[in-house]
Image 1 (cartoon, rainbow, N blue to C red):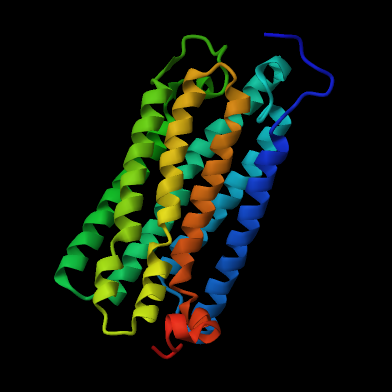
Image 2: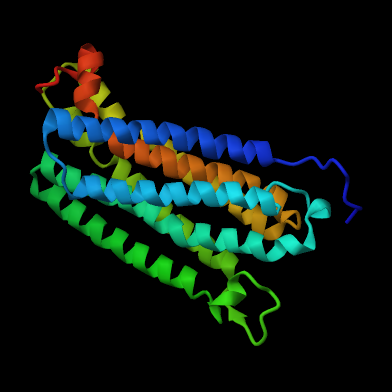
Length: 281
């Protein structure tokens, strides 16, 4: 590698821009959800607590991502200081440990919501199966992430003696693929049922948009997988990893926003009655 420059070109602003902007937007929708649930609907259930848990996880991810820029995230390899190695790896470890909660909780919340909205037997089978899948994925991925190395400290300290670790590349690609599968299934599941509802086409399209807007999350998750492969194979890991922080922020924050849209539908109905119907409906 070439010598470090005094004024290195970095992607720090790129990372911080995504993290701060999207997290702020997500918090706005979360506040709207809480307002709609308590003030308009008068109900706060387990699905809302799941979303609240995901919000806390995303805040941890966002703070962790911001801290990572102090320890080399977004820097070229020639500008990456040796003393950054351990703290940078710690931020990656924290991100990997919290990520499963951030993506699983909103989808579990949606499944519980589907059970309330769609009473059919087929929907119940799908929702319970999806929830079992998500819980199993959440527990297994979290445990493997936490205990990927023995001793655990080897996950962030490459000089730990007598350490053994699993192959991170294969694990993260496999877990990401399984997560993407659940994205497509959960976010797109209600589209068919909503299309059959006896409402004007504009209102049906509005409802489908609310539930199927998770397509953004699905596409982002696939893009994240593609770039994750590049990060594992390219030497300029910290610089190339900037896109991972960005796509992770999109996936987590937009995913949570999508899980809030149906809950803020009473507000959407009041603001856009032609597209979403009356708030009473």
